Length: 529
Image: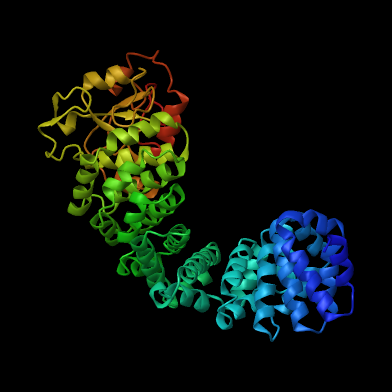
C-alpha cells in the first residue's frame, strides 16, 4: 500500500480501513515520515482521533502519531499547529488502557519538540492526566514519566505539575526494586522510569522551596540515596545516578534538609559517583558534597569520613571546568568549617597530604579570573588559615613559606591583594612587584607587603565575612601604627621623612577599602585611609 492510498483509506468510514491505514503510516514512520507529512497523513490521523468513536482506531492512530512525531520534527510542529495536543491529552484519560498508553507515547514524542511544544502541552492540561497515569497504568508509566520529565523543564508546565501532586508518586517509583521484575526489558524500563522520576523531582525542587520541603517530608531523601546506592552497585546506570545526584545537590541548598541528607548517609554513594561517574555525574556529586559541607561542621565531618578528600583533589585535574569548580568549592568548605577546631585542622592536614595545594595552584594559573579560580584561591587561603595568630607565641619555630628560614609570627609578613601570610622580611620585599607571585596561590605580582602586628587581621577570608573581620579588628589592641600602603622600608615613623612615596595602586586601595576599617590606619602623608 502506497502512502497516498493509506491517507485516502484513513478518510474512509470503514473501521478496518482506518485501522489498516494508521498501521501502514506507523510502519512507514522510520523511513518515510516526510512523505507521510507531505501527503497529509498527520491531518488524517488527527481527524481520526477527533471524530472516531472506536477504540481500535484511537489506539492505531495514536500509535502512528507517536512513531511519526518521534522521527520527524515537522510532524511535531504540524500536530501542535493543528491543535492536536488537546486531542491527545484528552485520550490520556480514556477508559481503554491501550489507548492511554498510545496517547502517552505520542505526548512523550511531542514533548521533545522544544519550548513551543511544552507550552502547548501545558496549556492543554497534560500534567494532571500524566501523573494519574503513573499511578494507574504500569504499561504507560515510562512514556508518562518521560513526558513529565520533559515538561518539568518548562517553568509554566513545572508549576502545573507541582499543582498535580506528583511527588508521592515519583518517590514511590524510586523505591521499586528491580529484583521484583522478570526479564531484562522490564528492568531496563524501570531504570529509565526511575531516572525520569529523579530528574522530574530535580526540576521541581530547583527554585521551588515548597517542592523541596515536600520531597523531604515524603521520604524522598532516603529514597534517592537508596536508589543511587542500588544504581552504583548494579553498574547499569541509564542516567539515573546523574539525575539523583542533581536532585540531592538541589535539596542540599536548604539548611533544613542537610541533617536529613547526612542521616541518610548520602555522602558515601556521592563519593563513589565522584570517583567513577561521568563528568555530569561527578559535577553534581561534588556539588552535593560541597553544599552538605558548607557552613556545617557535622556535614563537613560526614563528607570527610566518607573518604571524599582524595577524590575531590583528583577531580581538580578533571577536563571539565564545572567539576573543577565544584571540587575546589567543596575543599574550601572542608577546610573552613569550624575554623580553629581540631576536626577542621585535621581535615586541612588531610587535604594538604592529598596534594591539594599544587592542584589548586594549577587551577589558579590555568583559569585566572574565573569562578573556579576564585574557589581555588579561597581553598588555598583556608589551607593557610592554620598559620598561628601573630603574637600568640605559637609561631616560634615556624619557617618562611618562600625560603624556609625560621620566623616568628610576630615578625611575619603578608602579601596583598591575596592576603596570604607567613613570609620573612626579605622574601616579602622581593616578591612585591615581581612576576613570581604569591608562593601560596600564585596570584601574579603581589603589590603590597604589610607587617603582621598584634591583633591585626589582613585577610577577610580568615573570618569568612566582612562583618566578622570588622568585629575582630574592633577588639584588637593595640592598633597598628604604620603605613599599610608601602614596602617594609616605609614605617609611619619614616614616612614623614619620605614625602615622595608613590600613592597606593588601585588594587591596594580596593583591597584595603574592603578589608580594613576606615580611619584606623594611615597613609604615608599622614591622612586617614
